[in-house]
Image (cartoon, rainbow, N blue to C red; front, side, top):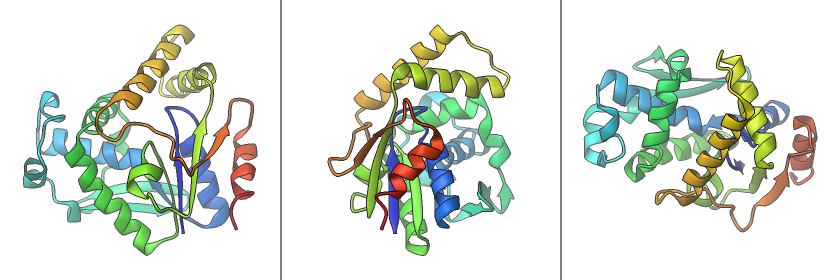
Amino acid sequence: MIITIDGPVNSGKSTIARMLAQKRGLFYINSGLLFRALAYVLTEICKIPLEQLVTLTHDQILKCFDLSRLEYMYQGNSESVLYDRNNISWHLKSQAIDHAASLIATNGDVREILLKLERSLAQLHDVVIDGRDTGSVVFPHADYKFFLTANPEVRALRWQRSQEKKGNRLPFDIALKEVNRRDERDKTRLTAPLIEPCDAVNIDSSDKSMDEVVKVIEGFLS
């Protein structure tokens, strides 16, 4: 079984996917973590400058990055990434890697490489995956597709709170501006833009708790 949960930044899709995975005994694929992992390998191990990430070709990526050396694990309701059998997960939370990941996410060759890994995981497990194009591109024939959203003000508040947990205190107007900027970028980028699959169930979480959203989703699962 494959369940996809797409949506804009801070719509709650990662939290919902984790909760659903735990309740249903599914294998959770955090697609964002995979992009951060590849960004870390390219910038920190391969020493590729940030300005080159967007234009890297398939051959250039594979020249320094071997997909077989990357292992994604999900155990005990927690995901981790190993490279050359070394756990690199704690390296992937920095703002620098977050920025690098946002750059490579616009690279079609990068997405094609990670798509292979995501599909290989789905051959081994019943999965729930969240992202921006998991139902439209990665798993167009998924068993269940959901598109999770919330109004920009609610998502800005969520982003503001998540940044506070990392020690970054930002005023609300800056948080709202950042959410709107990311929305525009995700919708208008040429490679894998954020779109709502025509066969996805749309869920607005603006006035719902995470538990309520999970219950709505479970109501569609057979």
